[in-house]
Length: 20
Image 1 (cartoon, rainbow, N blue to C red):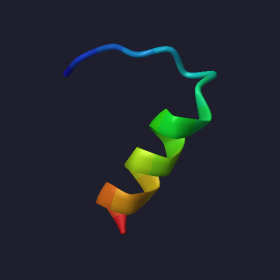
Image 2: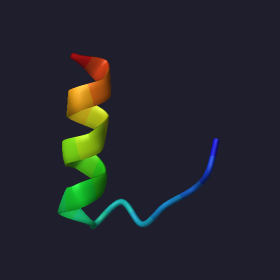
Image 3: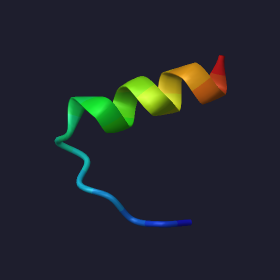
């Protein structure tokens, strides 16, 4: 898994969309 900055809102938007 590629490690990204956890303080980027775009990352969490992507995570939420994939997880849902």
